[in-house]
Length: 334
Length: 290
Ligand SMILES: Nc1ncnc2c1ncn2[C@@H]1O[C@H](COP(=O)(O)OP(=O)(O)OP(=O)(O)O)[C@@H](O)[C@H]1O
Ligand SMILES: [Mg+2]
Image 1 (cartoon, rainbow over the protein chains, first blue to last red):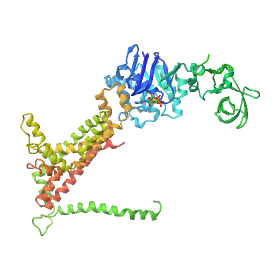
Image 2 (cartoon, helix red, strand yellow):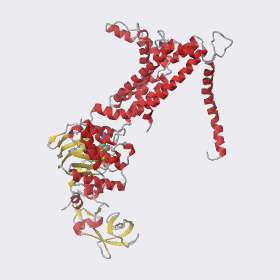
Image 3 (cartoon, helix red, strand yellow):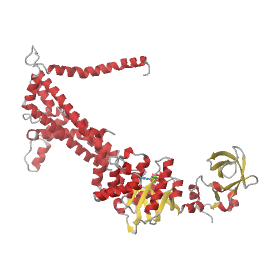
């Protein structure tokens, strides 16, 4: 079981309130991702749940029990740190067995669980090495191994993949998702990587300055962002945000159109501009369009290749059903 | 240093330093070796005949030699234990956020800046003196009779004085090592269910191993040659109770004016120091490998 409830939790460092009162419920077995810009309090929130920081006020409940004052070791949570935090002087085997040893398990049972975890994580050949003799991805797996042997109620990950290269990141992302499928344990995952958030999460929590801006499934957030911040934050490349007359015509103070929802038409589109840089990805082309009178740059995503060059004139039409409208306060207009 | 020319120029440039260093070390060493084979007593000037190993057999068979050996090892070992254990405890304390941290740190470092002779004299006259010393007053206040540290427990007293001098060094090195420990490792251990003692034993102590090795090696080198503290407090006595090898060599050559035996003692001391060094490197040197 791993149902975690935060009830009006706040956190201040000295005078500075980093987390204003915050409510959040994480259901058992859910994969929840915290995203948000740097410094918005993602790590702090995770550390509050872990018990590594004391809450300033409010209550944290794990499986219905008040855990606000419970020390980290007794919350039944396991954490994977960004720096891995492996114990450098212990072999992989000892690293993974450490929580079991601290729990006073029998040696035979320790060994059994370590071997089992090593099999799951493809670490069997490395059990007798030191962390210093492993690659980044292997270290990450050891850190995960150390977390799973304890059979925790929930896993906490703080940007676990940010030290890995792009290819390895994709691989580890899949492994963690698979692990979640298999274990069905609650996982809370902090990242600022769009793709990780969108692909892994059952539920995304978007944070800004300690506030929850929106909670929802990845597609929820993509299709119906609740405000301008979420609209601009979720999606890559970013949504085009347009003020002024064009927005007024749609009856809003700001409208947002995702690059993939702009069609290039040969003649007489709604908007006209000049093509600037185009980024060719093979499958897609991102065009940066200037001089539209709408915004500095409008990004357009075109499928495959387009025959437009730097300086060409381009006509654009948004898909009307995909235009997001926002009022003066930045809230969504239905 | 690519060309022949620049290479020879470089050699020319560093040669004064090299020659000075060689002279500095080799000449005294060679002379010591040379004197150790002569009958050379300042009270009997004139001929200094070559006597082979006589000085060595005289020095090594002297009962004072065995006593000095034991004292030297006790002194080095005792001070090492006290400074390493004390240093770890102090470093743990100084690593906490305590009020007045800056002042406390300076106070801890202070003994290192006091000259050995001065600190030994301060200890001898102001603390350990059986009549005027602070400890004597304290004992009197408690209704006990004063303890004459330097005659009752001369070696232990000197170990205390020398430890007091070296504690700051150990503390400083261990403190910096402790501060370089990744706090996430401690947090990970905390989440893994390790209590404060387990965290100290399984995470901190192994992390400190290298710093402890450095402290032990450096201190051993200096502690083998402790001299000033003994000279100004006990003069190696009573008897030979607080005579170490360094002091014995001094006593032979300058109190008995026997340069030959003193030199032989010096050579023995060098050999013993190297044995200790090899022994130490075997034992803990592997901690220094990355
Ligand atoms: N120990 C601390 N003392 C004071 N302020 C802190 C402390 N830890 C974090 N903060 C502040 O709290 C805010 C949130 O920090 P946090 O580490 O949670 O950000 P984050 O969302 O994890 O950012 P990033 O994506 O860069 O890791 C920051 O403004 C930071 O300066
Ligand atoms: Mg962070």
